[in-house]
Amino acid sequence: MKEWLRDAVFYQIYPQSFNDTNADGIGDIQGIIQKLDYIKNTGFNAIWINPCYTSPFTDAGYDVEDYYTIAPRYGTNEDIKNLFAQAHAKGIRVILDLVPGHTSITCKWFQESLKPEKNEYSGRYIWTDYVWKGCDGYSGISGSMRGLSDRNGSFGVNYYSTQPALNYGFAKITESWQQSVDSEDAVSTCNAIIDIIRHWLSLGCDGFRVDMAFSLVKDDDEHLETIKLWKRIFNVIRPEFPDAVFVSEWGQPDESLIAGFDMDFLLPFGDSHYMDLFRTDNPYFSKMPDGDALPFFTKYIENVNITKGKGLMCIPSGNHDIPRISYKLDDEEMKLAYAFLMSMPGAPFIYYGDEIGMKYVEGLKSVEGAYNRTGSRTPMQWDNSLNNGFSSSSRDKLYIPIDSDADKPTVEKQISDKSSIYNELKKLISVRHLYKALQADAEFELVHLEKSASPLVYKRGGKILVAINVSDKAAKCEIKENLGNVIYELGGSAVLTDDVLSIPACSASFIEII
Ligand code: NOJ
Image (tube, rainbow, N blue to C red; front, side, top):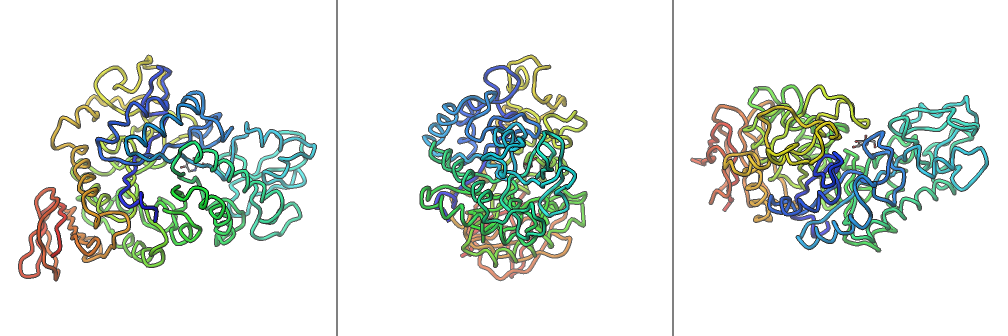
C-alpha cells in the first residue's frame, strides 16, 4: 500500500458544481483552488475531481474529446498544474478521473476512425466490417451505431450512444471483424492510455479514479483479459510513478485489486450490497427496523480475506451517479453513517455537499446527460449570498439550478452550528487522523451483528472497539474484551459490565481495547 493512503480521507469534487469564479454559471479549477483551505480545515487530505477535460458534455465530461487538455470552461492546463502545486503545499493530494473505455464522438481519434480510408485510427474503436452487421450482444458493449459516416461498418458503444468503445480487443474471437487483445490496434489503444496517464502524472497529479475500469476487453465475462491488460499498464507506469494511486470503478475488489489497482469502490453494482447500507427503501443506517447489514458484511469479510495485502476497499458516502446519502437518512442517521465510514478500513470518500447534508433535489430537468442523477449534482451551497455563494452569475445562467428549499444547509450555517453534520464529520475525520488503528489497512474484525438488528460492533487494528446502534432502542451484546478510554462518542457511549456491552439508542462510540 502507498504510504500516503494509510491516512487518506478523500473529498470528491464534481467540478461544474463546486465553485464558479468567472461568473459563467459553471464551477472551475480556480474555484477549487480558492476552497483548498476549506477542504483542508475539514480534514480532507486528498481530492478526486470528476473529468475536467475538453468535451462536448453529453455525459458531463465522461465523453472526452481531448484527453490532454482541460476544458476551457474549467480553465487551462496551467490552472490545474497550479491546483496540484497549491494542494500539495497544503498537504492535499489530487487525483483526476481517467476514462479509458470510450471517448466522445468529437474526439479526433474517432473522427479519423469514421473515415472510409484506412488510417492510424481505423482500429482504435470496435468496428464491424459491414454497416448492416451490428456489434452488440457481446458483454461490455452496450449498443451498436451505424450511419455516422461512409465507413462501411457499425461501431460499438460503451455507455451512451455518444461514447464509442475504444478497442482493447475481444477475449474470445468468434467473428472476423473482432481483434485479439494482442492485435496491433488493441496494443496501440493501450499505449495511448499509458501516454495520457503519464502526461497528467508528470504535471503533478497524484493518480486516477478510473471510470468503468472493468469494461475494457470485450466478451470477457470473467474479466481475465481485462485484468491482464491493467497489469500491463501498471507494469509500465508503476516504476515511473511509484507513488501514484489508482482507484477503480469496478465494484469487485476480488478482481480489480488482483489487476493491480490500489483501491476499488464498493458500488451500487457488483455484489457488495453497498446500497443496503444507506439507500434501499429500508437502509441499515436508518432507525426503521428490518434494515439488514448482514449481506454487506458477509461479502465484505469474504473480500477482506481474498484481498489481504493487495489493496483497499473504499466505501463512499455517495457519488455523482446515485441519490445523495441524505435521500433516505435524516441528520442523526447520517452522523451515525459517518461514524461508520470514518472507522472502516480503506480510504473514505465524501461526495461534495454530503459533509453538510445537501439534499437530492427532485424533479430537475436533465442536464448534460445526467437524467435522474441531476438531483445529486446541484451547485454547492456555501452561504446565504447570491446563488448561495456558488457563482455571481445571474440565476438563470447557472448550469444546474440550486436547491430551492429555503431551509437548505449551507457551509456557513453548518460551521456555526456545533451540532451540525459538518462539525460531527470534521470531528470524526480528526479522530481517524489521530489513531492508526482506525486507518486504511488496520485489521477489521466483526464482533457482533445479527440479521436486521442493531448493534453493529467491530474491532479495528485489534485496538479500538467501534459500537454503533442505529435503532431508537438501547441495545446489548456480549463481548469478551477489556475496554479503556472512550475516544469518540455520539449520543452516549457504550458501557461494558460483566461482559455485556450496553449501547444507547442512536449512538456510536469508539473505545480503546486494553
Ligand atoms: C461511470 C461514471 O461515474 C458515470 O457518471 C458515467 O456516466 C459512466 N461511467 C460513463 O462514463
